[in-house]
Length: 167
Image (cartoon, rainbow, N blue to C red; front, side):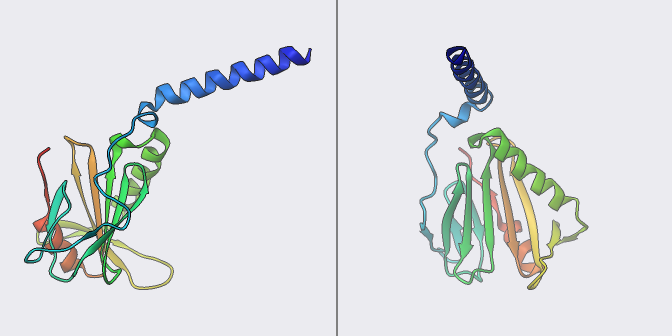
């Protein structure tokens, strides 16, 4: 009786693990990371080149990368006020992809307005000053860039200079 129960548990575990891997094929892929932990990006005449995209930002001396998880890297400027979230959806397992896209969809449902042609959203925290965010998506590479700054005009200026690079 115990042997049948143990065999059943092992078989069920193998089936569940196999289904998980089949539905999340990128879990076994080893995607090369574009960014290293703590990598510092310095400007050339106010232009920052992050490899897959570039921006113009006069109020930052540098950005430091911080990989959060596979397919999600965050860049924070030297003051800690400007944050760039780079989300590569094809490199994430389905649960994390769903979680991040749900968060972004909820953020994009908040009231918005246009500044210099850029759709701006306000992020309110329970403590501290509000932040202003903007969003860009490259449908070809399934990459999202979500930027926030403490100033709506600065957010618009950075996003107006934003360019995805061709791969």
